[in-house]
Length: 609
Image (tube, rainbow, N blue to C red):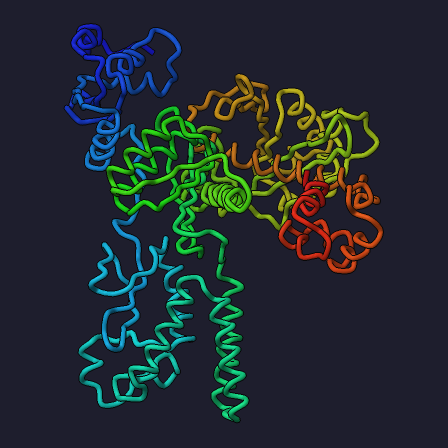
C-alpha cells in the first residue's frame, strides 16, 4: 500500500521538536483519527513513515492522515495525562477506549441515630456516612446488601418514612428490619446491629462468628432459648455467606488486572480487594484497532480507569509493563497518593493473579462465542464462502498427540447459537503408524460418518478440517468413498492451514478444489473459523493429555518426594481415591495433616504439569 501523498510528512517532521508531547492525527475531514504521546515527538512520529517494517494496520492509519497537530509538554507524565483526556473526549477511530461506568457503587451507612443502609454512587463523603467499596458491579453489591439486611436487619427506608410512620413496614414483617421507625428497637440495640454489620463489611466475619457464639452460649446459660435460637440461625447464615465471600490475607486495598488477547479481541479482568475482602470482578472487552500487546492494553486501561476512579495502594498486573515508573508517577498526580504497580509477585499475590488470569481467559472465550458476534460472523461466512445459506451445523476435526503417543481426535459441533457442547466427541486413534496425522484423520472421519451415510439429517452443512491440503485431501477421499457428498448435496468442506510463521490471523482457508481463499485479517468469517478451530484444538489436546496421564497414573503418588505409605493412604481416604486427589487444589491438599505448601504444590504439579 502506498502512503497518502497529500500529507508532506518530510516537511512536517522537519518542524517537530524532540521534546515530550502529544500528537493528534487528522483525516481529510479534519476529524481526529488517532491520539498518541511520546517522550521524543520527532523520533516517535518519524517511525510512522518508515519505508519498511510497518504493519497493514499502521499503513492504513498513515494513509488516512491529512494533517498532524502537536502539543509539547514539560514531562512525559504530563503527556500521558493529556493523551488520556484527549482519547476520552475525542474517541478517535484508531484508539482503544475502555467503556466504563462513571462511578462504581458503594455501600453507605448514613450518619443518623438509626443509620440507613443504601447503595451510593459518586465520590464518598465521610460527612454523609461510612462507605464500603467500591463494588465492581451492581450484582455484587446487591448480593452483599441482601445478606446484610437478612443478618443485621438495618433500615433502608427514606428519612421521611422513618420520621412519619405509625406502623412498621413490610421489611419489618419479613425480618429485614428491626423497626426503629415505630420504636421496636432502641438506639443502643441498633448500634450493636450497626457494629456487627460493619465487622462483616470489613471482612471480619470469623471474629463476628466468635462473638455470636459467645453470645449464644450466654443466652443459653440464662435460659433465654428463643434469643439463643435466633443467634444460632444468624451464625449459620454467617457461615454460609462467609464460605462464598472470598476473604483474603491481604491488608489494605489492592486491584488485580489481568489481560487476555485473542483474535484481535481483548479482555481486561479487574479484581477488586478492599480491606482483605474480594468485592468481585468485572471484565472489560475491546477490539484491538492497531498492533498491540497485553502489556500495552493494561497500560491504557490503567490510565483510563484510574482517571475516573480512585486508585488503590497496590495494583498487581499480569504482564510486565514497559512504563511502570511513568504510570506510577501519573497515578500519583491523579490520586495524590503513592501507588505501587507489581508484576513479579509471590505467595498469596501470585495465587490471586493466577485466578484473575484464568478468569480473563474464560471471560474472553465466552465473549467470542456470544450470540451477538456469532450472528454477524455467520452471515459473513455465507458471503465469503459462497454458501447457499447460514449453516445450521458445523463440525470441525483436529488431531492431537505427543510424538505419536496417545493420539486423540476431536470433533466439535457449532450451530447458529454457538457451541453445542453435548455433541462434542473424542476418538481414540489406534492401529496407525505413530505420528501419521493423515491416517488419524482418515480413521476419525470414517468412524464419524460411516454410520450416517444414509441419514442426511445427521450430516453437517459445513465441515472444517484443521490442516492443509494433505488433510483436506484425505477428508475428501473419505467423504467420496462413503458417498456422503451425494447424500448431502450442499455439504461444503474446507481446510484450515497454518499461515505465515504459523501466526493467528494469517491462516489459509482451502476449498474443495485445493484453492487458497484470501480473507482480510479482520474478516468476521475468518474470526468465526478461528474460534471453531481453536475450540477443536482445545478439546483434542485436553483429551490427549487425559489419555496420556491415564497411561502414566499408576503409582504416581509414590513418585512424589515426601509422600510415604501413610500420607498416601490419608490422601486417598480423604479425597475418595486417586481421581479426587487429582481434582484437589493446593489449598485443599494443605488441609491434610503433614502436608505443607511445597508438598501440596508437588502433588498438584504431578497431575497438572
